[in-house]
Image (cartoon, one colour):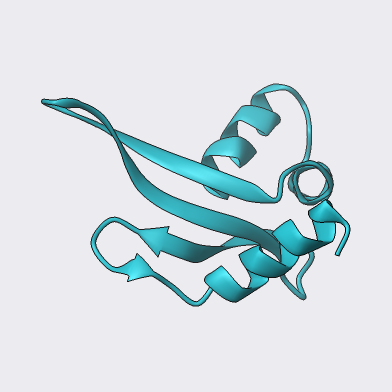
Length: 85
């Protein structure tokens, strides 16, 4: 996902470091939807996380083929934080 956004940002004159900074500040959770013959279907839920390099990566929370993943704990923490407790 970040690669697609990098391409779009480059078209708008935004460099990679600026895009990743903006992305990390604005987006915490991604919902990935696939389009198939029977319509759209939820494929993955992921958290965005900033890496040591300053770039943004994803951590899977849930995938249609595997169920819950390692990112479920951090997502629960994020939700609790947003709820004020």
